[in-house]
Image (cartoon, rainbow, N blue to C red; front, side):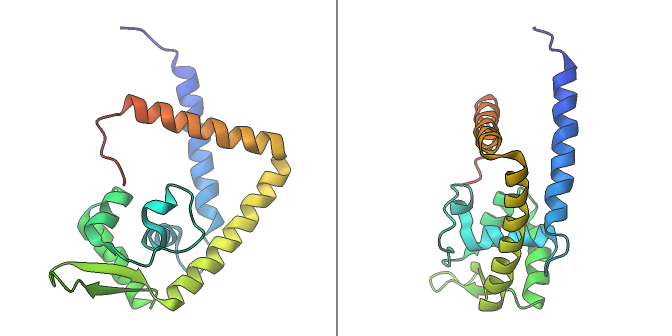
Length: 163
């Protein structure tokens, strides 16, 4: 078995942790917590979120089990977060016509407005960071991040797909 230098791995862990903290702080002062924001994005865009097709929200709704799988979270934890968003008036659950035991979660108009405001605010901040990096470094960052994701997905072929 080939031995690898742990240096780059530890550097990557450190930089990813810094990035996670910075990313989380972008939405920390919005109407919803960063975790709730992520949940609302998944409810609004479903698998389109992963395909970067955020031109129009996906209002077909999403089941709690689909949402939990996308968040890689337990069903009870996802249900608690959805309940908090429901209490705030940002989401609603609707039972399916064909199977009343299954409900879909959708954003309410107030939820979509809150999500759009917070997404736009985060977008402005990220674009300021992109401006600091410059066009070439931004393009390189996005390309290399995608290539790293591809490589990690290839090494983890047995993992559950999000969509």
